[in-house]
Length: 382
Image 1: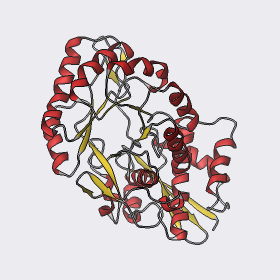
Image 2: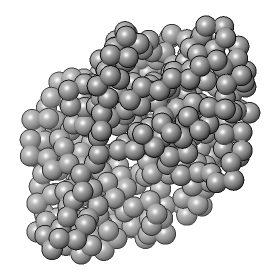
Image 3: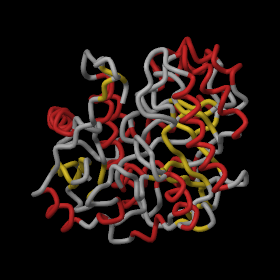
């Protein structure tokens, strides 16, 4: 079952899909992309193609090691995202060849259904209350929103107070029986994070995500005393070596590796096992498309420390085209009472609408995140 062909499809709203076809006719799908850098990751996958064509697609671990260790330079968002999509597709192939879901190949399922949360609002939420009501009516029992828009290195208490009022309005609508994730998005620097986290504590957040940027890991330990909420991070970390120091600091409660950025199923399974040894929960990051979400769910159903899964269904980035539009079996992601049922189809458990993919690839996309500036004209975190 050798790899014969590799195809890449840049599709709206901001995704890159990968199809690997084998000599046996079995094909697998992956999603190798960095948001806003789709062409860069596409080039990285194409540069890895000589290491793939002719290889036995079942040798997933060896292929992963070759792609990671075969080059002198390794790691980082671009190279790891390229490996991630390839890895997803290979697991999809192997599961299909053996007629079982990927989680069975990882050791079997540890749960029957997976808790899931939905995004509300945009980067500058103005209708979050309405959006929260909609998410709850759609079956979600947990939601997440960005904590604020632009935040200067040292900003005013008024801006924090205004942001807290917005978040409090969401908590009032959903009640305290629902989860409320608050994402600082790396927009808040250490000096303001302390005040912000303390002011939010009475709302009992499900977690506070990226209270500061991941590269400032040394700050995490000091921030824990300003909140009783679990602290989450990891979407901008790309391998078990990135996570290793985070675990050693003992300052995080939930890790959020992305199945399209952190080395795919092979690597995230290892990261999850490391987290379990440090009594840390797993909540995979996923603001991307159907393949990435399907891969994340395979990990969720196999890893006992998986606590909740992010969903990009209906997220504000998905303008014009949504996640379910590329599936022949969109019901696989149906949400009932806050959960998604365990998938039963082989491989990643989804059926890609290839005709739709090829049609939309003719349109493509050129998505870029905005560049934000403070009132004084200086660049700030988006």
